[in-house]
Amino acid sequence: MIPAAFDYKRAGSADEAIALLGEYGEDAKLLAGGHSLLPLMKYRLASPAVLIDIGRLSDLSYIREDGDVVRIGALTRHRDIEISELLKSQVGLLPEVAGHVGDPQVRHRGTIGGSLAHGDPASDLPSAILALRATLVIKGPNGTREVSSDDFFTGFLETAVGPDELLTEIIVSKTPNATFGFQKFNRRAQDWAIVGCSVIVNNGSCGVGLVNMDSRPVRAAGVESAIAGGASAADGAASAADGCEPPTDLNASVEYRQHLARVLVRRALETAGK
Amino acid sequence: MGDTVQVTMNINGTAQSHDVEPRTLLVHYIRDVCGLTGTNIGCDSSSCGACTIHLDGEAVKSCTMLAVQADGHDLTTIEGLAPSAEKLHPMQQAFHECHALQCGYCTPGMVMAAVSLLDEVPNPTERQVRIGLEGNLCRCTGYHNIVKAVLQCAAEGVAK
Ligand SMILES: Cc1cc2nc3c(=O)[nH]c(=O)nc-3n(C[C@H](O)[C@H](O)[C@H](O)COP(=O)(O)OP(=O)(O)OC[C@H]3O[C@@H](n4cnc5c(N)ncnc54)[C@H](O)[C@@H]3O)c2cc1C
Ligand code: FES
Ligand code: FES
Image (cartoon, rainbow over all chains, first blue to last red; front, side):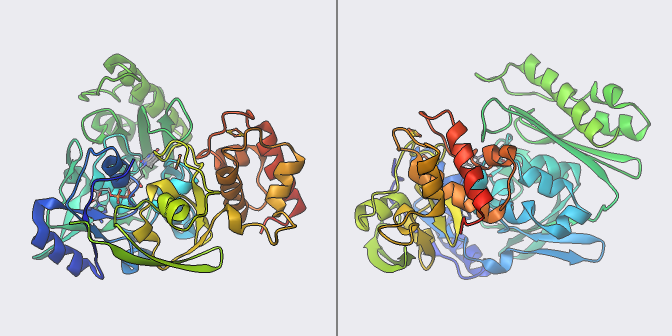
C-alpha cells in the first residue's frame, strides 16, 4: 500500500510549520512520527496534497522541570516518556501509560503531540492527560494560547488545535506523592483499547480519564467526586459509565463497554490504593 | 505535485543517495532502490514487524516510515548485523542454535527487534521478552524457541 502522491515540505521551526500551514491551508497535514497519519494515508483514508514534516523539530522534544510543573515538548516520543526518570518520580502515570502504547517499534516513532492532536477516542495517552488535568500549549500565527485538557478533545478525531496551529507543549503538575492506575482492555497484543482508563489519586482528590467510551476521550466526573468524598473503589467505580455514549463495534456492544468501564475503573482505583 | 526529493542515508555502513518520490515508503526504498531484500514485507500495515530495521540503533517498522523521514540517519538492516560473511551476529547464532525459525519469513524483523530489545533491557525476564517482541508476529514457531533464543543471547551478554 502506497500513499497517494503529495508534496513534501520540511519545517525548520515551529514558526515555519505554521507559515506553511497558512500557505497550503486545508490541503496540508503535519507529519510528526507518522504512526497515525501514514497508516491512514496508505489506506487512502487521508490524501493530503502537502505533508509538512515537523519530525525534525528537536527543540520541541524535551521533558523539563519548571517549578511545580513538568513541561513536555509535543515532539517527545512515547519511548522517551516511558523511560523518563523525571516523569517517573514526579508524574508516574504518564510513563506508565506511554509504556502501553502499541509496541516498542511504535513507541520509538510516535509522539505525545501526534497522539493528542490526532484526537482518536481510543488512544491511551488522552486518558492520562484528562486525569492529570494537563494544560496544552497551542501555537498559531497570532502567538500561543493555553487550553485545559477538558477543552482540548472536542469531538471524534477533533481537537482544539486549529487548521493553522501546532500543539507545542503539554504541561503537567508535579504530584510526586500521588498514586495512580492504568487499565487497558484489548484482545490482542499491540491493539488499541476496547476500553481504557487512567486514575490518579492525590491528597484526597481524584482524576479519572476514559478512552473509547465516547466519541472523544472523557473524564468520569461522577467517580472523581465519589472517591474524593470517601467512597470505596467498588462504590466509586459504579458510576464510571454514567453519561458516556460508548461506540458499538465488532469488538464490543454499548452494554459491554459500560461494564468494562466499571470493572477497569475499579481495578485502576485499587491499583491506586483505593 | 509529487516532485522527487533527494535522500541520503547510511545503511549498514554504506552511504546511499537517491532521488525518490516523497511517498516512497522506507521499506520499498531499502528493498527496491538499494536492493537490500533481507527486510521483508508481511502485513504492510504496521502490525507484523517483518519489516523491522534499526534507525539510529532503535527498532522501527520500515513500512510505516517514509524514506524522506530517514534522510540523514544511520540505518541497519538484517544484512548489516553479522560481523562478517563467515560469522553470525550472536542473536542470529542463538536463533540458529535454538531452532527459533521455521519458514523464516518473520526472522529478519524478529532478530532486529530482539537486538533492539536487549539494547534497552540487557537482562530481560521471559515475560519482558514476550512483551518486548509484542510488535512482531510469527505464524510458525509458536514463539517458544524465539523467546529461548533471546534469553540465551542475553545470558551470553554479547548482544551488541
Ligand atoms: C501498529 C500501531 C499500534 C498502535 N497502538 C496504539 C495504542 O495501543 N495506543 C495508542 O494510543 N496509540 C497507538 N498507536 C498510535 C501511536 O500512538 C501514534 O504514534 C500516535 O497516535 C500519533 O503520533 P505520531 O507522532 O505518530 O503522529 P502523526 O501520525 O505524525 O500525526 C497524527 C495527526 O496529528 C497531527 N499532528 C501531529 N503532531 C502535531 C502537532 N504537534 N500539532 C498539531 N497536529 C499534530 C498530524 O497532522 C496528524 O493529523 C499505534 C500505531 C501503530 C502504527
Ligand atoms: S510489514 Fe511492516 S509491520 Fe508488517
Ligand atoms: S518462522 Fe515462519 S513466520 Fe516466523
